[in-house]
Length: 144
Image 1 (cartoon, rainbow, N blue to C red):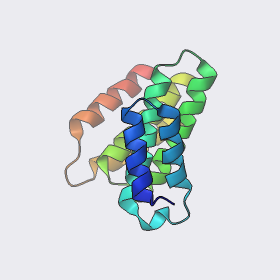
Image 2: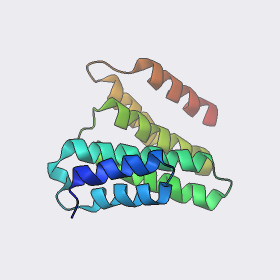
Image 3: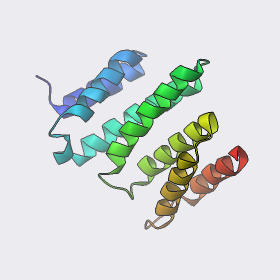
Image 4: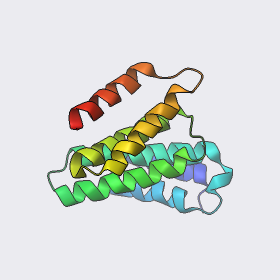
């Protein structure tokens, strides 16, 4: 049986080769493992990898129902990873982006609120990614 780190490596390799379904399966296997909470770096890498992959796929799809499913799965994966360290900038920015995307799709105000909370939280870290925060806030403003 593969270790979580080996699954992560395999997921990244499969993603690079364009084997997206298999990469998604590897990422989700990692996130479902009951011991993943003990390996924060692997949890964060798997959540971020899966989230980015699903967001990218959502942006390339013309089927609104598929886009919604992909974005919902991305938010779930990113939220799980983000809970291990809410101040990790890359995770926080990607999670905010996913909420913005879902807000643009469905107009649900809870996504607007979630994105703003996430971005506010990131302004409080030691070295906030201000340019990316501004960029995402501009997306939010344009989406209203």
